[in-house]
Length: 264
Length: 311
Image (cartoon, rainbow over all chains, first blue to last red; front, side, top):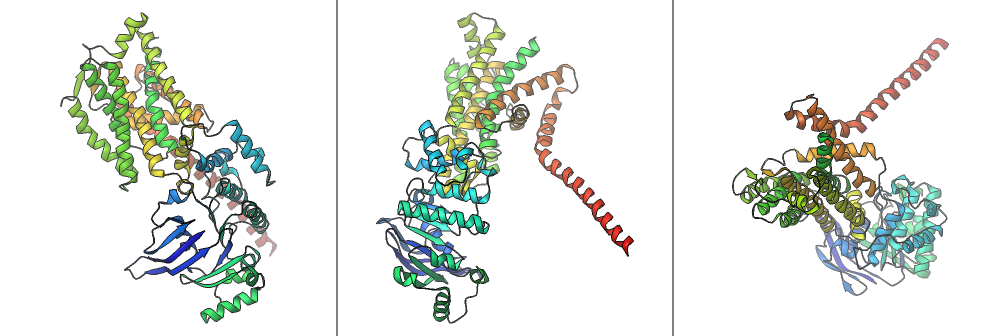
């Protein structure tokens, strides 16, 4: 489904702060894979997502999605194929527009004629139905400005916006990290529900190792812009937290250095 | 009566300007200085066509001229990566030359001897001159307002509103923000130039300096309008721009007729209105903060003195 071939990216090239964020990284995702991505700070997780989404063009290597070469495709064109939810709940929605308008904006991916009315009665009903499935009470507040919602609610709206029209790939960039534990769990369960229902190919960055082990069918560990661990299916389901940390120390010859990852 | 009628005519005509400013300033969230150039651009084009005997074509080309100015500013902002305010200033400054050129390198163009849209309408409707002027102004502003309201409820309109609200999100939802920005600037400046074009034919002359300070006039109208219509939807916003423009003209007329100010004080007064209105939120939070700090201080001093007294 998604294929990265020898992806390389160096930031601030030629300065003392030069940082090689992706180091000859190759990765192939099967259709329907739900991959969790872990790694310490600066390991290149977000850079990996950026490379797929087109925040920057790779220095070397290529990106293919569903057989299509998207290496040099612009960000907004890739967005038609890829849904992305960020950690910051403020990033994914337009705060001064209503829930309905935000959903309509996302639904635009499906439309051909930009001069048609954005929200017809039919659309409105459909958005309502869709929202009501997640029992967050959002369907009663279709005319509320998104800026009035809580972080968790905004994250759910973003998630729905990204998946309403089935994307080829869903990228979740620590999308529950800024939420309180109860809300995070709720958003996580909604995520799993949507991914399972639509059989989405998904990559999720997380700092929560437990959640990384519990979720999905494949786990990647990144370090210094390289994939140092790639386990899937049976092997992954048998992996424990201790096992994962041992594997990490073996590979890197050092202890896992991220408190945030361990404390969760 | 003449005062009321005149203010209403001007208020409605300048409502087109206010709507244009509303689109760039409130919807797109950019203080767009192109307005000063595009207003005069519309004025000059309309005047030149009127002199040549085609007032209707003049209005049409005024709109196109304004849209072109908007596209240029948009191009500078997006593709060339120039700061939005500087991009507007560059276009505005460049247009000064273009406008002089259109007006035959004279800073004034009189249309007294020529047929204007307004003069033609007197013959057509056979109504009172002032009523005719009012009707045309009202008709224009209503038609454009309805067009805008419909437009901002279409998909592309929604995309433009989202661009001003959260650019990051728009990029992530398959919309090209360069296109939405350029389009919004074209539409806004088209409206502003239409205003200029109508004003030229309304007052019967074109002056190269008509556009100076016009941005502040537009901003003042938008802000005054928001005092009257508090709702924050696009429809309310566009209507409030028109209402604000009419109220602004009444304030101006009142101030002039009672000779509160000399005529040349107008720009300063407009600037103060805009400055104060935009500073209000900051002043409010400052005053609230001061109040809170005062009560907080009383509280901790009380607790402190109690503890001391206890010892």
